[in-house]
Amino acid sequence: MATTVDVLNANNEKVDSLELPEAIFDAPAKSCLLHEVVRMQRANRRRGTANTKGRSEVRGGGKKPWRQKGTGRARHGTIRSPLWRHGGTIFGPHPRNYGYEVPKAVRRQALCGALTVKAHSGAVRLLESLSLEKPSTKTMQSLLKGMGIQGKTLLVLPERDELVEKSARNLPGVRVLTVRGLNVYDILKADALIFTPEGVRTLQEVLAA
Image 1 (cartoon, rainbow, N blue to C red):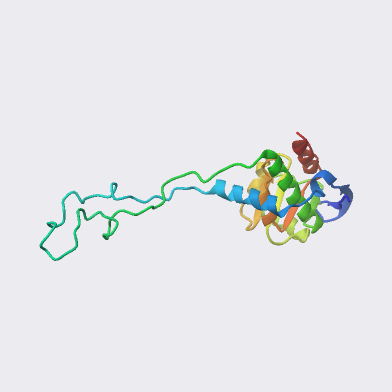
Image 2: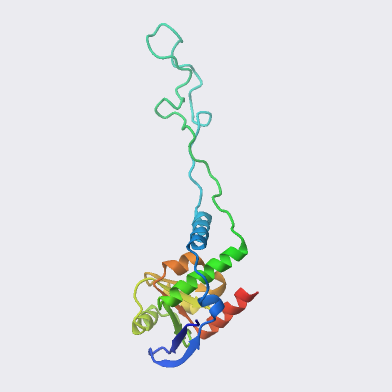
């Protein structure tokens, strides 16, 4: 069953209504796919720069610390053994790439599933237009407050708009993405998703390609 959402203007007044595409906002939401795609996204965002030195990489240790027998102490060949303080690390992490990919069809299905979850919970809001004459954090804050939106908010634009991005970047919990940058992780994190009718049409075109 299609979900119908009111289209609001900047004064939070209803100016129209729009039926959200069933293929996108009324798709099966499979938790296993959502989990797999979010896991992939988080892995791809890992920097993987942790590094430790093994016994062959730490400095010093070229000389045997004491003779093999007769001192009453344990036998050691180097002070850079992992058994020693400041010695090498056993099986420590090294720089690596944690990223991996899941099939495009799975990502698309998970994206539609995440949007469906938000649409059915009433988190998807439609704004007649989202354009500003100049960057203004105060104007953006007033707009969101007028719509009664609180918490983490995701503004989804048909294409990049530098004025909107600059106006929202200093607001805590507010994130701006284009339709092509829309992803499962950010959708599930958001308490509210704000689209424009043009953005919904663009999303339809992108997912149909």
